Amino acid sequence: MGRKVNVARRMREIAPARFSCTTSRDIASVNASTALRTYLDFEKPVLELENKVAELKAMQKDGKGPQIADEIARLEQKAKAALVDTYARLTPWQKTLVARHPERPHALDFVGGLIEDFTPLAGDRYFAEDEAIVGGLGRFRNKPVLVLGHEKGSDTEKRIKHNFGMARPEGYRKAVRLMEMADRFGLPIITFVDTPGAYPGIGAEERGQAEAIARSTECCLRLGVPIVAVIVGEGGSGGAIAIATANRILMLEHAIYSVISPEGAASIIWRDSNKKEEAATNMKITAQDLDQLGVIDGIVKEPTGGAHRDRESVIISTGNAIARMLSEFDGKSADDIRAQRHERFLSIGR
Image (tube, rainbow, N blue to C red):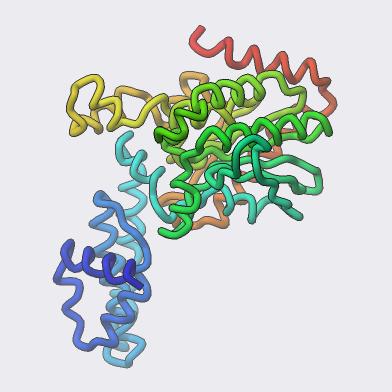
């Protein structure tokens, strides 16, 4: 409930004129249709138009403006055009903001939409369970698979539970345990990457964070089963690489993949985090840049306005892309799969 109030307050700050409705019922209708959606700063023109449409629809529903259907249609077209124009020219920093959008689908959303009979598996058998990385067995289009992914969480409680997708050493040791099990039973592996990076806390460092990431990366390289990784939001540093050292790497259209965050790079290079936009541009972190550089193998197109505006369609498109990638390894031996993965990474930058 608090979140709705905060979003509504933010909307009033951005465009007070939108709330000049004649009754509290009209305001409630506007809130119901738009206040639950999070808008990024560069989406303000779209926000204003969509709120105006919501206001007019509320008036029409109450019988106060029966002759405004044409105006509603005109504004809806204008809002759609504004959204298309905005997303056609996103800067790398704006793509970073879209990749971090709180309503963007996360690993468990993809698992729920693509994996049947999913059975979660927990624990690293050394120290503890790490909720930042989820994993388990299931069926992808009638084929048994192992699934791993970073989970950020969809609300405050779940974000805290999943540590905002930042895994500790036990998360990567759990990933190794599950990947080795998949290799033993000949199961293809699908990973969904969405993390700002591995958790940098003191306890994580004391328990061997760097070693756990290195062993997870090494495990990926020696498996004899195909691995398809999908960067669905942020692919941050070694925390992402640890489960993304795959035969095929896909990225959603507005996802990012980098060795460090733009803010971190700006702080190190210029000693000024305000240069984050310049860092994002120079780092080549977008799917389009990385596709040209040969770092990834394909881009999954997102709906206009980002994956959060139409989760179902982007999940289906992602499933189709994963299926195509996995089919390339049908009938191949473990040695061939392993060799292809090695060559894939050795060829980057040649």
